[in-house]
Image 1 (cartoon, rainbow, N blue to C red):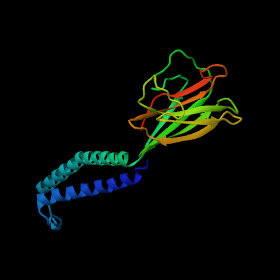
Image 2 (image 1 turned 180 degrees about the vertical axis):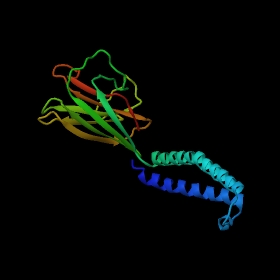
Image 3 (image 1 turned 90 degrees about the vertical axis):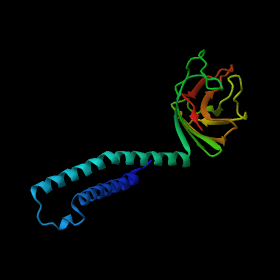
Image 4 (image 1 turned 180 degrees about the horizontal axis):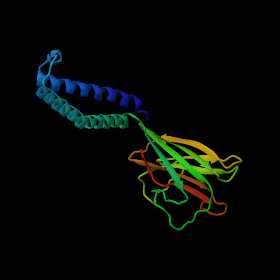
Length: 215
């Protein structure tokens, strides 16, 4: 996100506050018409320097607080008004439907996957990319919303599950976007990529996101 414009505005505010504070302090010390004095004795000059130094110190101490408060306000407004976006890395870990790991399986593939999960209003989506996988091969992919029981199913068509396919090209690359409604009570989502086994229900390959994205 580009905050260049905000930084420029606050730089101008900072400068204006600095000179306003300096001018106000000097005016209080010497009167509003101090600029018309052609001569200033040594004692008055020392007093002026002390007043200017005090004013500068006040601005330097106060300005970080002003800048911090403004930044927090902008961030809060952005998080309130914009959609959530989360980047998710994958690992070769077989997981249950509640995202808990199944420790009795071992990695079998060579693919690398990433996903970006977005949520806005009542919709959640995932942009999924797979590379260095088997060429010209169809992989299954699911966007699974949680919480859900570990014993519950998470097949395509189940509540809170969006299913699709990744069809790799000759170089083993593929991408797909999954999108669906946010299920009642769902607060997070994760992605599961699998290659069905030929003679078993255990996938020949599987890739799951390291963590769940808030939606």
